[in-house]
Amino acid sequence: MLNTKINVSLNRDLRKKYGIRRFPVVKGDIVKIVSGARKGEGGKVIAVNHKTRKISIEGVTIAKADGKQVEYYVDHSNLVVTKLELSIEGRYNKIKEVTARRNLPAPEPEKPAESEATPVESEVTDEDNAGETIDLPENNEDASEDSEEESEESSESIDNKEDDNNEN
Image 1 (tube, rainbow, N blue to C red):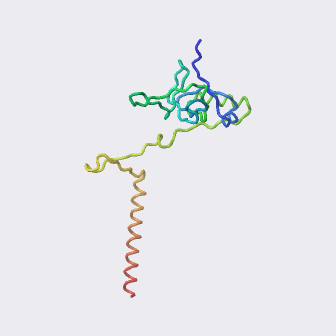
Image 2: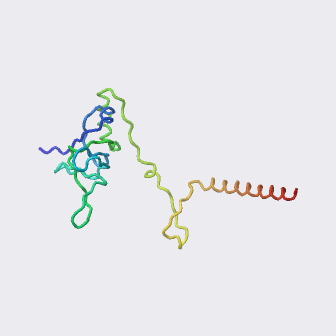
Image 3: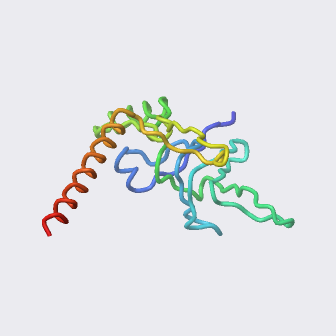
């Protein structure tokens, strides 16, 4: 029977934190190469080939004879995981279960990055600037109040300058 999960060793910090030595690797984990010709390189896992038990890492490529860059697959025994992707609920629950058994504090769930969660509204303004986008403020009321205050301050500073000129 073929074991479909490829376990990869965790680094020292993760071993202490979660109380486990190795964990199945998935797309999105951050790994580092610890032995072989590419030692010291690392990055995010972009593909896992369960049949050959090899892992492709973002930024680790090899040049073909015609000059094309193709992904380089590394054996799982040459890797160490430096950061786990815990946004997958099943994985998070497994880690939580293991840490509870070993009387360690439960890990905090990862939240998606704010830039992915809230897209910025943009609008094309002129035909000349058709390729450029302009970020709009979220609250238009605040922007109009700020511009009114700025105009009042600027008119006061002009009045003060005129008074200073009249006194001289």
